[in-house]
Length: 149
Image (cartoon, rainbow, N blue to C red; front, side, top):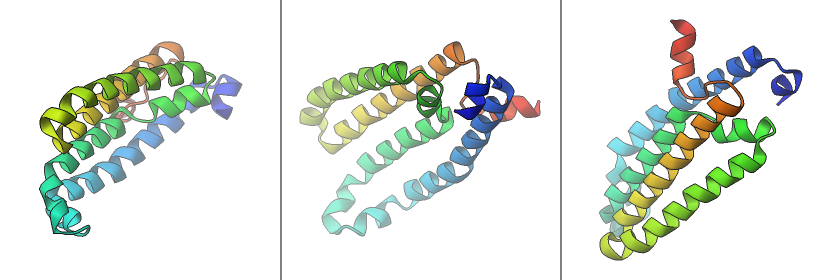
């Protein structure tokens, strides 16, 4: 927020890239561990939870999408675009609720996880596009690779 307030786009990009690198560097390996050991993780809650392993894996995939797209929603909120961030979040939520109404009766927990994956993907993707357009920085992990090229 301070870098944006000063109009220092370079510093804002640097901070955002650092956050993206941390999200991916810490979050993706953790998510991969949860994916690999999903049965064991679900078994911690009791044997009945193990059958929900694919729902958890699909949910974790949604988290990975959010991590890869970086802190876009937070960047919007910190850079004077709170209204835009809220509208994007509400739109993603409306899509997710609509999908919940269709997918949960048909597919149960896996349907819920799939609707969550779609909602998180919409939130991440549209937030990223909005940050690029309205703030002028790249919030995704691409920023880390571009700065090194």
